[in-house]
Length: 279
Image (tube, rainbow, N blue to C red; front, side, top):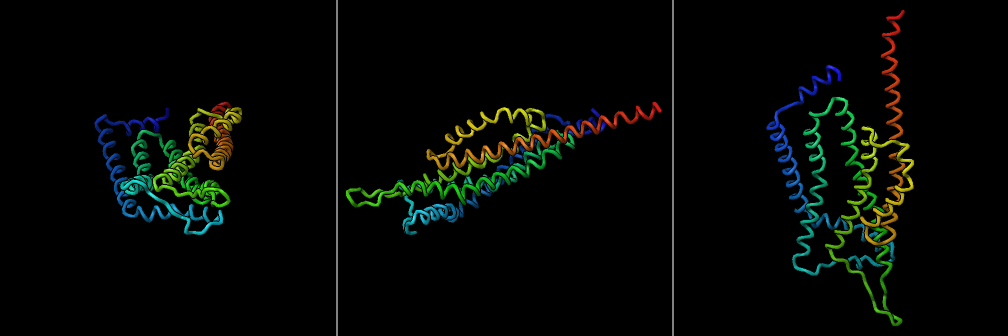
């Protein structure tokens, strides 16, 4: 350990009570930020829910139905109220995530070396961006596809058939779209997690390559667990997961290449003084 690193560690060391006070401050900021975001989202809960219904409208249009078919119901007096609370909590967590992630970083940053802080910061930025990419994929493509799949099961009646129409409950529709957003957002964190593991040497690009077949199987199993029981959403989650796994292999290879170059450079620097002394 170099002198600079020792100085950084001594600077970051503090009594337990100081760490606890720092933790309390970070928790207050995080909870306060979430509470404010929750209140804002609850105030606009109906507008947010109408925004989430737009993919359902697209699905109705794709199915060739009239827009008056876009109808959701609730069967218990308190159902829509609790649905708005659930929506406000979900929206509040999304809005407050940058603040919460920043507070987590500020709490652990003093215990990291300078190069570790510099390496950790890009992942702090990449994580919410990847989550939003997954959520956008759900909103603009997979939710309309899933709803179109369910709408296609309707029966119009006539010719001895009973009319069977889809009338989703507000709580069930919100649970569906929240599950999809959470599942895709979680899966899109795969490159971040594997890259961090590759940086600390827990995984290697070759190891990820060797486990590719198992990764494909696990991707379909996870998709079956996290998504509704329809083939469109399951395949739709499994395929991006496999693609992200391939990206993870590529990023791990880049990290290994950079690490090898750094090792060669350090070796060359350590040999230079010896050569000069010999001459």
